[in-house]
Length: 74
Image (cartoon, rainbow, N blue to C red; front, side, top):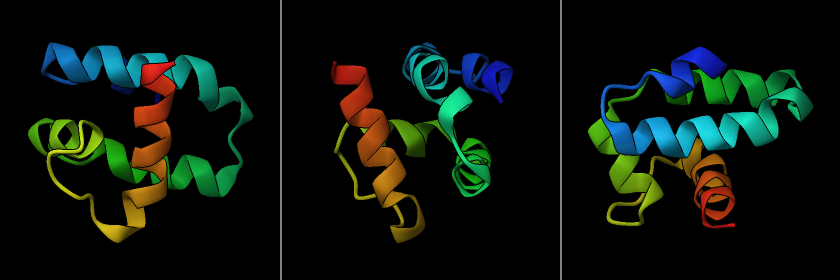
């Protein structure tokens, strides 16, 4: 998943998700890894709009997207 976080397709998501993966993947439980894996299957354009707050993410990703956005801003 770390490699999939780094090679997204658009540079912005490469940076955002690779930073998040570096900080969080090792500490995630199975449920967290499952939802992160599902998120990685989403389109980069959608992910970018969700993480930057331009569009509300689907409810199943809301907490994770919020965490990603906060992690990247740190």
